[in-house]
Length: 315
Image (cartoon, rainbow, N blue to C red; front, side, top):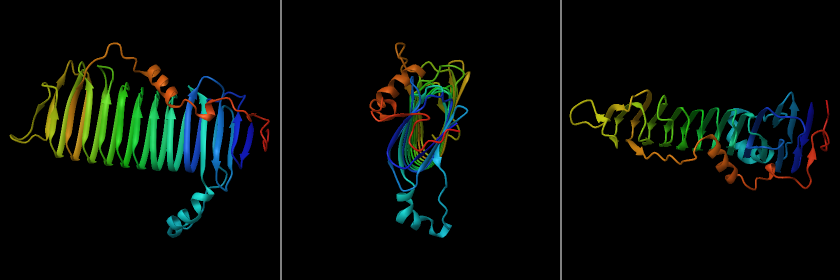
């Protein structure tokens, strides 16, 4: 077991293999990227309270040793006066591609890319960006947008107040829900046996699926207009009302459900690109381009290896 206390900007590299990543931060920026090399961590900025880093049995953990304790009625005042100064950090982490990750951030921005073994993201307020991920992907946000690009596997995105954007997804299962905000889904899912569920209480939904899709389609807006670029998907319900539509694309082995309480629904057709490189590998390449220059994924001049870092306590 290795243990390090981070009190100032610092770089670490780890000789032991990392299979799981658990990060719990309060405020700041978190960037996690999959890489072919060993795990690395860089803290470029940190507040008054130090971070505790541990590596045990293949799990790399980054968190505060003591979480802030404050009376509820003083919460917002305490946070703006001193909380952000005490518990803030900008952290970049590079881990092997097949590392399962659990990422928690109360306030700030989070970017996760090129991970293949599933990612669980929970952010209270800020922005979440997901690039080239695979496996079971779950992102939960209270206030702020979620952007997902080039995802595969199973995707579940939720936000209370904020926009959800999904682009070039090859996931077989997609679930996206927001209470207040729009949903934009540009999907390159497999043509058959795909399950897509998009829901919003207040906001517009725009979905684009492959023109060769095999989907059983149901679109319904309580208060809003429904339009479809597929002639097979026709309006249903009361005569003269265009707030619902249904139909079958191809053999209908998959399922597409779109529901909104207040807002319009648009279903668009996506041309099939037989030469497209989208998928898990393509998403990884794009994520690598996006994260080019991330300090945690590059060799460090003042890098210390696991077990030799200042303040380390080998167990």
